[in-house]
Length: 592
Image (tube, rainbow, N blue to C red):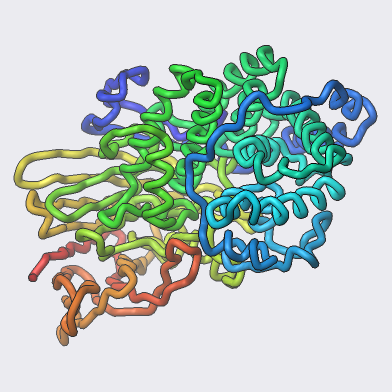
């Protein structure tokens, strides 16, 4: 499988968790293959697989005995969304800004976004309903929608509704919320639910490995394992599912616990899936397999390494911050207590945290096209926060933005200019193709890191602009030991045979957090930043100064934890690089 590979440094890839939090001098992270999406052979194989679902042979494979009841009913360890739950009680299904009346919803062809349709078919809305309703209140709503789903998809294998990862999620949610969907006295309805559950498990047995690596493959194999534990006679399936899940984790995660998609949102989703599976084992008075439990510890550490002082995520690879409450609920459900991973090996996010300040930097090539949809050209971008307030952010949210966001803006959120880094000639450091895949660009990142009581320093460079512009981008960041000053330098250095006559325009962008007020100075070399806070004067004050370019303040946008677009500002340092290169130095310093 194509991957982001680490070279140099002499580190043992099989090192224990404690040894993963380290980067050797001169370490290189390389993007190996996968610059395009699925090959023609892979696409044909996937299409053929889906076509076989409609054949009588596959229908015969799904037949067999169906259970009269479940062996156990596991808990759902994560609380649902209160607003979405109340909407269900009012007769509406809501997700990321979309609201559809349940009574008029066409379950065969829903007129909604892809994310909404997956939310519908995955049955995660059962969690929202159970959060706000008693069994007596919620069961009529859940059973009515369940009956309609069975009428639309229970007998026919649909390419979307029966997608293996959605079946994996359905098994987890159907079993965890069985009291909501199996309270009916209608024995025919109850038998139908359990029959379709058994058919879905058989479908998963043959399709779990057919979905792309990442949360989708993990979801599929979690469903297989859960079915083996909760459907009578499932011991062989349990063993089969545990072996498949171990393989899925190996292909979907790096050794340090990060997702191969390099998306914190996908990693959070994967942790949530394993937390639900953990409750399935608990319902059977069993422990999660040792290898899975050890992987879960690494996953939580990697995820925490991308959080800020507000306990929400930094915005990378289409992900948004989510909400601190949801993240805390998932971490608690995982049962893991660990520290944030500061120096990820392949996951690629470097973390500096001193005093009240926290910085997260993308110091690796972007994900390969085969393992992520909507990847971003964000190499060497960073986010920076002071306590609960974000000072420098990325626009983020391309994959989680509300459906009301224009598609052109959502695509723009993936560009290098939507991240807090240097942009050469208004181009992307890694190409973004018309079909959404990532193409050529950053293939190698060189990384070094130094730590001392006085300061922590990261120096990294990437080759994303070499092919087109003949320039390497090198970024140095230094955070003082008290967390009150962040110094940086961005340099363009000549490399390769490509030489453009004249000068090359560039811009270093610092997108500012929501609520940060900016006052540029008259000389165009500095700005005063006031963070949100109590009182008329606001919160803490930071000074920004720059040398080597011209400073301007421009409008920007940030996608918040609910997927909504929030108007913000950005500091833009512009300049021109001659053939010999150029550099810009800058600093953020806390004044109050």
